[in-house]
Length: 178
Image (tube, rainbow, N blue to C red; front, side, top):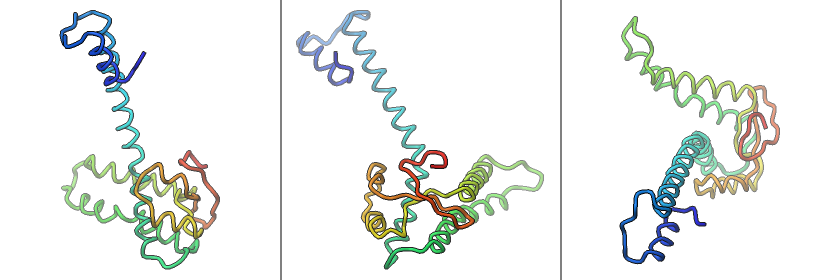
């Protein structure tokens, strides 16, 4: 029995012919409702997953632009400098939001979200920041040719670089401290 909405509609159309009216509680009407609800649920899950992956895609996009300008593989120190530049990207926006706030007023939601994101990324950098291994020539080439799709990141090597200078291999997709 098909579960996709288009397939269910096609099967019912073949069975019934040109008749487009169905009884409210008929089997076919129930199948259409189930298939429609399933497709809505799948769309919601896909959009939620896309929102969850967006910060990682922005991160990799930043490193891709740095890799485009590079002539060769990066060193550990240069990768740490790139991470610190990336982590500092919201500081100007945070300072403008704080300066716009009147004295004695509570912080805005935007300010709170920026602080939370900055703090979460700083904590990740302390324990190990997930990124492509830009010391590896093959990974650097793949990063330069990356098409900004999540699925194509699986072919690259990934590492976690900590603030203290330690580097260890990581898995794709990022899971905790892998």
